[in-house]
Amino acid sequence: MCNFSLGIMVGTVMGASLILAVHPMNKRAMRKAYHRAGRMMNKMNHTIRELA
Image (tube, rainbow, N blue to C red; front, top):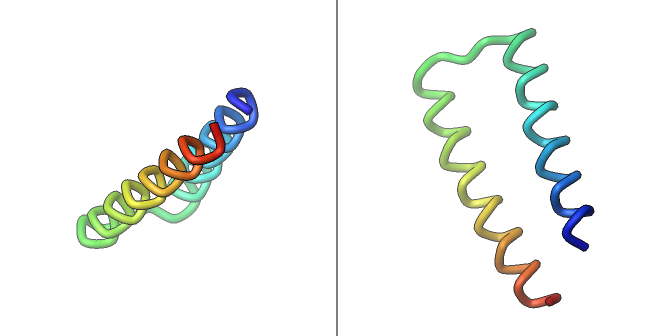
């Protein structure tokens, strides 16, 4: 389970970096994406804790 969640996080970071390389963001969109990613990580942490 730990390897699975690590793979998801690594894939997310690599995908985001590829998207940013192709299409850079302005500050407002970056702030919005940062908060969205934070919420997603919190939801993943809660889900992993419930499964464990």
